[in-house]
Length: 83
Picture 1 (tube, rainbow, N blue to C red):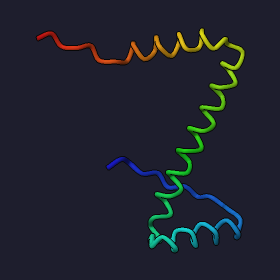
Picture 2 (picture 1 turned 60 degrees about the horizontal axis):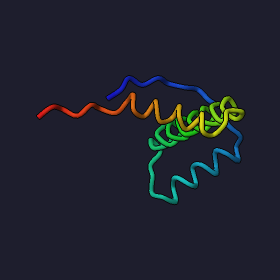
Picture 3 (picture 1 turned 30 degrees about the horizontal axis):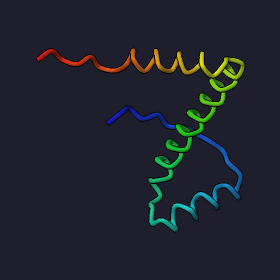
Picture 4 (picture 1 turned 180 degrees about the vertical axis):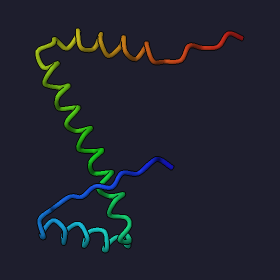
């Protein structure tokens, strides 16, 4: 298990009720709130990272962008083992 860090956060009463109702409707327990928040934060970070990358590459011609993607893909593929 990974090391945990305790956060203290404040949200509006409406958000608190909405999230707790959402979790309760799905049969989730009080402790599942932390898991829900962690997953939501990870998705938001990914979303923001992708939006930033899209902005940075917006002016790049599509052929050049595809060449970068192809190069990166080749770079991370495992090499086949010799027989």
